[in-house]
Structure formats: structure tokens, C-alpha cells
Image (cartoon, rainbow, N blue to C red; front, side, top):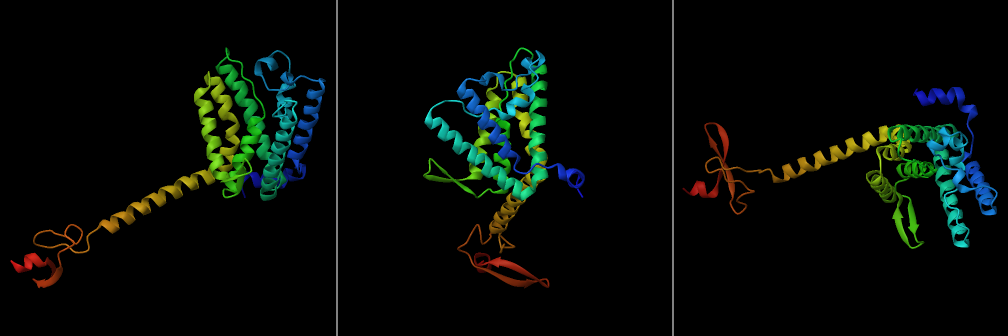
Length: 267
């Protein structure tokens, strides 16, 4: 029984089914308040400097910050589609893992994000680190891609692309953001949210690396076997690979079978 199994056995009754649906509803309400002018979007993201100044709600409010606040109809349509994908992938993970494990996955993502934001701010005090709930979407997307690598998404409703390739693209963009970050504090804040993915999928990641290593080694051995000569002339060293036009025969010599090519036999 794993540690997570023990936690589920003891605290499983505290699990919140469809937790992402509640997050989306909260984001929708916040979005409506922002459009209506009741609250400002700038008060929502996690900014460690602002928290140190007394704005403690930011430790939680960034989770319900909507991904887009533009007021156009096209923006609203994009937001609705985005929320649908987020809910669809989350529902698939919750169905595969169970509500408790999925709750723990999201909670670990929140904790690692908050921790990395404050650690990054302490390492780079001159920087101003701003955190949105991008980690929530990225970690759910990567987990969904690992569990369902061959599911296809239609890009622009036309081009079908398997989700595993989109996941690699997301990882590449994250790496690009990491390399282009202005400070090490920002880099830590970028990598922090990925720790929950690594924590949950470390076994699968290690198995994938080992499987790829075994496939590479097998392919190498296969090539070596294909290139290995079956016949080698005892006298001149010619083989059926180096001299495929020659014919090789075996003869008895000192009680043993010795391979000799046709040219050496003719001498």
C-alpha cells in the first residue's frame, strides 16, 4: 500500500467530487464581477510583494482568477471553450484516479506554486513575481496527455493533432519561458508548479526513459547482428559481408570444420 493509498483510506471521505467545476464556476463569477466593474483584475494574481504588504487574500484569489478578461464576444466564446476543455480533461483524470487523488494532485499544485513564488521572491528580491493559475491548466493538461496520449484535438477545428505532441509543445514553451525569464526567482516560480506533475508521474517518467533505453539498445544489437558475418574464411579473412560474391565452404582440418572461400580453395 502506497502512502497515497493510506491517505485515501484515512481521509478519502473529505474528497470533493467535480472540484474543477466549482473552480470554473468561481472563475465565471469573478469574470462577471470584473466585466461589471465591481472588482479589479489586478487584485487577484499572487504577488509575493503584495502579500508581504498585507494583501493576504492573493494566496487564494489567484486560483479563481479567470484566464481572460477581455469583454468582446469572441473572447467570451474562447473563454467558454477553454473552460470546457479544462473541465473535460479534469473529469477524465478524476474518473481514472478517483476524486481524492485528483484533489491531492491539484492541492499539491497549489502548494508548490505558492511555495515556489515566495522562494523565488526571496531569491530575487528586486524582481516582481506575478502568478496566475496557469499551473492549474498546465499540470492538468500534462497529466491528461500522459494518461491519454493518443487522444486527438482538432486545431482550428481542422487539423487533428494527438495530445501527446501538444504536451511536448507545452513543455517546449515552458522551457522557453524558463530560459527567457529575467531572474532566477522567476525561473523557480515557473518550475515550481511542475513539481506536482513530476511527483505523481515520476514512476511513469522513469519507466519511459528506461523503455526508450531498452529499445535503443535492442535496435543497436539488431543492427550488430545484421552486420555480423555468417561465414569467415579461415585463410584470407574474407566474409560474406565484405565479399558477398564469394562462395564459402567448410572442410575438415585437424578434426574440426574450417570455413574457406572459393578463391582460397582454388589456390
